[in-house]
Length: 170
Image 1 (tube, rainbow, N blue to C red):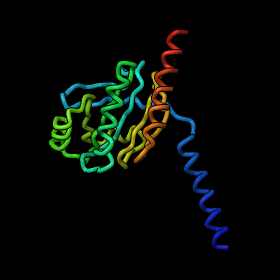
Image 2 (image 1 turned 180 degrees about the horizontal axis):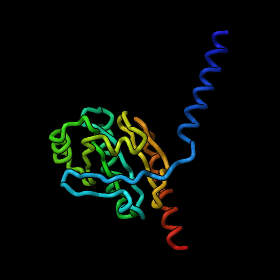
Image 3 (image 1 turned 90 degrees about the horizontal axis):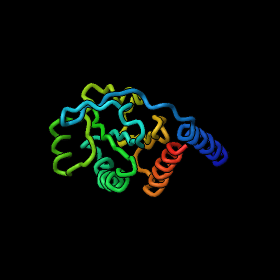
């Protein structure tokens, strides 16, 4: 009986998890990022590009471990229209974020979310790393929480880049 109950619970939770990650994706919120250089970037300015909005923190071990992959993906795909905006969480001290970005030579924009407004706009993000892949039309293609499959991410990214090019030719 316990095994049957455990199996039923696992199936139910799997269904909930599958719904959460496969539910129809909404349009990305209209937000403005404040970068470390003081530049203001509106997400709408990035339409026409595939954008990864990545919420992270310098104290997040997984976030730090994923940064080399983010750099590699950015450098490999930016010429094809890929952009990353790394959004440091509200609780992350600005001097830590600046030091991290400078010492790691992050090639993409790094934004400070000092009052948590951007995190709130994306569904009140609290856990890091959380990332949103947004297509060229501003639709959220996929949400990523924690560790993710690198190859699956690249396939999804390549598909988003390819779909965008095809629709531009029509």
